[in-house]
Amino acid sequence: MELFGITFTGIYAFFICAAIALVLAVPIAFSYTVKNKSYSKGFVLTIFSLPIAVMTVLMMVGNQVGAAVAIAGVFALVRFRSLPCTAKELVNVFMAMIVGVAVANAKADALIVAVVFTVVVCAINIVFNTTHLGEVSRSSKTLRITIPESLDYTDVFDDLFEKYTSAHELVRVKTANMGSMFQLTYEITLKNERDERAFLNDLRCRNGNLDIICAKTLQDENTL
Image 1 (cartoon, rainbow, N blue to C red):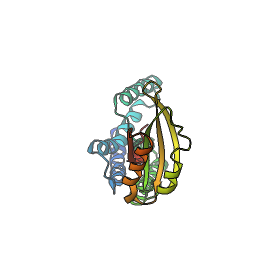
Image 2: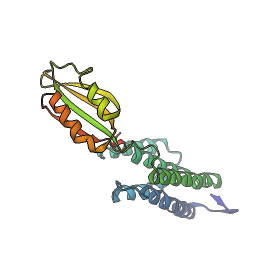
Image 3: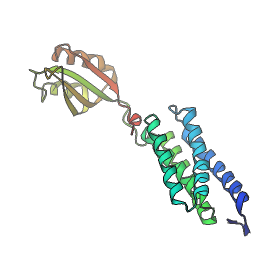
Image 4: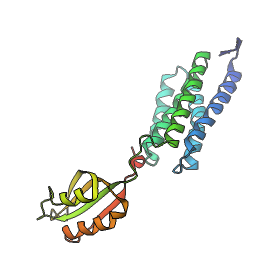
C-alpha cells in the first residue's frame, strides 16, 4: 500500500490497516450508544471488532476463491447460531463490515472512502438516537381484542374508537380456540392517555369480558 508517498508492504501494511480499522471502529461503536438505552456491551464489542476482523480476513484471502467461499460459509454458520437482531443492529453490523472491506483495499482512495463513510455512519447514529425522527407517536398503542365468533367485528367498536382515539386501524385478524373466537389487532392513537382505563372497560363490556391487551408500539424492536 502507498500512503503519503511512502510504500508499505507485508506486515507493515497490515499493521497500518489494522490501526486505521480500529480508529474508525471507535466512533462507530460510540455513536451507536449515544442516547440509546437498549444497546448491550456485547453488541458494542461486535461493532468495534468487525472492521478489523473483516479487514484481516480479506487481506488474508486475497484472490483465493476457494478460501473466500469457505469463509463465507463460516459467516453463515455464525449468523444462524446468533440471536435475532433488530433492524438497527443489523444495519450497524453491515456498516462496520463495509468499513473493514474499504480498509482491506489498502489504497489511499479506499482509506479516504472508509473515513468519509465512518463520519456518515456516526452522523446517522447520532441524529436518529438524539432526535425523535422516525419514532412512533408516544400515544400510539397496539390493541389486541379477543371476541366471540358470533360478534361481527367490522363495526362493533367504531363508536368507542371515535370517542377515545384520534386514529385507529385494524391490522390483523386471527382465529383462535378452534375458530370459536377472533383475535383482532389494532394500531391506535389515544386522544388522552388518561382515558385508557375507561376505554378498556368499555371494550370489555362489548367483547364479553374476554382478553384485551393494550401495549406500547415498539417499532425499534422489530427483528429480522
